Length: 405
Image (cartoon, rainbow, N blue to C red):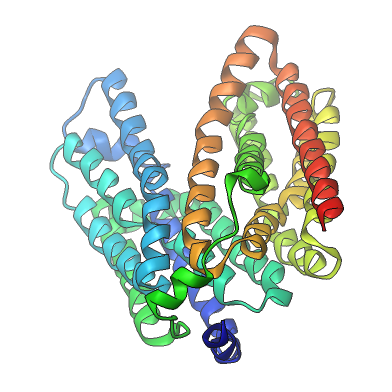
């Protein structure tokens, strides 16, 4: 315990610099993971696939491959980060992504593209590794704000990637776009090696003595995993139906996709704006009240989305919903951090990342099936009911934890 206390002031000297390095690295790696979305079918066709149905299949496989392996390996990298160091995992992820992106630009067949995208997910994990490092090394009084800033960088990367992928390939070519992305990630690798500092770690014997405490019986960990999944689920559940839904309120057919794109971007924009502010608020008043309030607010905002009469109303409501959800993933990470021994942070946050990937897969499946069977408006109402149930579960657990305290 004494060793941990001695390391804490030293870590506090450079946690802000670590935060900025991790923000830049997470932004660049997520841009690289998502930039191919606009031109992926074109690249598959360039690799020799001509049948439209086959192009769609290969494109879906290639895009989902990275997130599939990333979800499977996140707990493993988190556990290794706890054991061998968080900085080492970030170095591995940034170098691995830089190499994988360069190789993707050299693919000669669609199966190679899928295999290299699988490799990118396997070797990546910079954003989740950054969350582990920032959560474990930031002073607890600033954890919410720091994780909120990091979350803003992560979401900005997810939004910026497709935008860059839309205008860059016509200028320099598809393959050169991948090589440029790899070069940018390599600079993030250099910054991670040279600028990021990690506090000295206790000896393994000391870690085994201090580790403990956070078990499934406490109820907090499974609830945080479920809540993280629900947040991504709520954002993604309307993705399959949003264009068809918007088309009911837009007269000109050529404007439908443009308006749908704006609607999708609004939630991300709202989250980018609010993440750091809600994180700072959570540091001041508590992470659980902000988490519960955000879940209830999102549930309420989903109700009017089912009864809009104009597309601009949906734009505003999605933006407000993004604001409500923006700081909630940092709150989840902070709650995990505050209830887990420092030696277990990586493993538990790795599981949290995997749960969020599950939400990314289940959300669109849920929205597509419910929208097809019961109507598109029901998707918003059903998602709102699920979010409200998640808020009630967290409220119950917060009061239960308060009674025990």
